Image 1: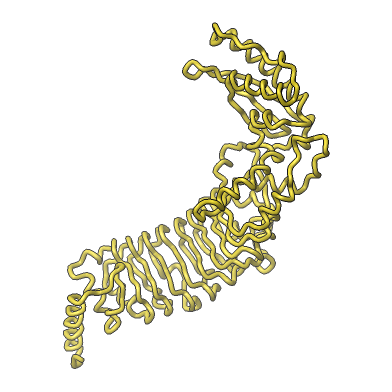
Image 2: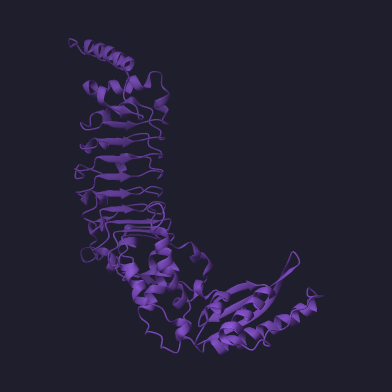
Length: 443
C-alpha cells in the first residue's frame, strides 16, 4: 500500500541504518517510514549536497545544516559512520521543517512520487498522455496508482498553507473518467511485503476494456463501476482458481450469480490456475469470446449456458479427452475453437458443435483418421489445423484428410493451405475407389 504524509504528519521516521561501498563510492541507505508504510532510498553524498543547494535557493534553508564535504579520507569507515549519523540528523531536521510544505526537491529525493498517495496521483495524467501519444498501445498504470486514486477520493483537500500537497485533482479525475482502455500491472506487489493495497475503479467511468496482469482478485474492494461498462476484461497471470474469483472479486459470498451480472462480451483468463468452468458464467450472459489458454482445464460444463459464445480458446491446458469437457449442442453459436498444444488423442463429442467453422488442434496426439471423420461430419467446418499431430506424418496425409470431406474438400483450408490441383486429383481418385468399394457408381 502507499503512504499518506498528508494524514500522517506526526507519524513519520527517517533513519540511515547502514551504508554500502560500491566500487569506491559510498551509498547511504535511507529508510523512510510514513505511518505503517516504509521503503529504502540509496543516495550518495553528492546527491545530499545537490538537495541542500536547491533547498537553500528555493526555501531559504540554513546552508550550515549539511555536514561539509571532505576531500581526503572520505571512504574511511569511521568517517563514513560519523557522516551517516550527521546525514540522518540533517534529513530529520529538514523534514520536520518542511513536512507541511514539502518542496518537490525533497519529495523527489525521498522518492515520495513512487510511494506516497498525494505525489503518486500527480504523475497519473502524464502516464496516460504518454501512452496516448504512442502507437496505439493501451495506457498502463500500476496497482499502486489505482490504490492512490481510490484512497485520495476519500480524503479532504489539503489546506492552502500545505502548498507541497496541492494538485488539480479534478483534472486528474477527468483524465481517468475519459479513458476507454487501461492496463494495470501488479508486478511490484511482490516487493510490498505485508502491506498490500486495495483499489476500486470508481474514477474510470467510461472504461470499456481492462487488462489486469499479476493482480490478485482480493485487491479489488469494489468492482461495481466495471460491471455495467466493461466490454472486454483480460485477467492474466494472477493465480485465479475459478471464474468466481474474477467476477465476484469484491464479494465475500461467491454464489451471488444473479446479483452481480456483467456486460462483458470478451473475457480472457489466460495463464491462471483454472480447472473447471462452473455455472458462475451465468453472470456474463452476453459473452461472445472466451480465452482460457494456459490453465489446467478439465471440465467446461458451465459454458453450455453461454448461448452467445462464438469463440473459445483452450490452448496449453493439457486436455486429454474432449468428451470430458462437457460441451454440447447448446453452444449453438460457437464457430471458432482453438485446442492447440494439449494432449488430445480423441475429439469424440466435437460432433455436437454443428456451427463450428474453425478448428485448431495443432500439437496434440491425434493419430487415427476416424477422429478426422468426426470433424468432417461438421457441416460448417472450413478451416482445420492438424499439424504437429502423429497423423500429420502419415504419407499423403493431406489427401487422406481432405478426402473425408467429400465434395467440400475443395473449400477446406488444411494447415493454413487450400488443396492444390494435384491433391484434388488424388482426392477424386480416392473418392471414386471408395464409391466402387461401397457398390455405388462414381459420379
